[in-house]
Image (cartoon, rainbow, N blue to C red; front, side):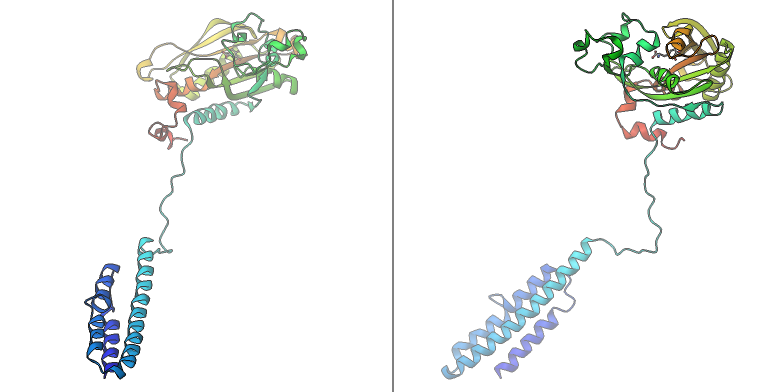
Length: 350
Ligand code: DAH
């Protein structure tokens, strides 16, 4: 009799757990069987009214039923936990659906300008030259005809590597005094020592100066150098190449002018100004854009190229400056802060 009743309880427990959706409900149902007021606990109270000799059998059956019921609840709990784990993984994955578009990132505006500049010069036969950002004083200044007392050679203007002073007694050629290059003009010398004229190279790269950072200055910036060496090159060739370049960059309506200037490694030297009708606040104003000039024969002599036979021109411009003019950017610091709000404005442009 007892056994039958207990088996009904076991069956009831099984039935009660069908379709239980949550651990909370499982707890509630468990209490109705195994809790202090649960049906099995109530049933156990019959022990008192049972004949002494039947009690061991009753107890055994009771424990057996309790074990079975506990096992039923435990199995169900494991299943519920599995279900909860699956739920936490989110909706099932449908591998047949197209994947969501991934954000590939964009090209940095300075890289874009550099690529544009390079591709413009490539069209007229220039190749790209590269050199190290760590340079010797000789390549950066001496070989470029830049005298000892030039301000760029001052500790205040250039980032020298330590121990410069230790070399005071060694001859200049062996000094190997290292610095972070202040301009890409040093690539002119590296190219002239490596390649035979005629040559046309463009040398974009990073440069460094001891500048205090503000809206127009950065201790780390980028330039593009250009060097053209051939027979009987004239200022007209220089102007023609730069006009072509600036028209490609700023549009056909650009006007340019060469203004006399001075650079130690070019003679004569010029600043190039340009005027563009549609350049925001700077529309129709003369703006200084780059430096240039005819390669000084002293530079050619130094690299053992005969200036009677070969001559040429060189130019240098700031990649930040060009990018700021092209896009109306008013603060150089935007380029280095990695702010997505700034950078993403350029991500769709090639
Ligand atoms: N190196 C110069 C600078 O950093 C720029 C420059 C001027 C380069 C005239 C040249 C040049 O090649 O001919 O200010």
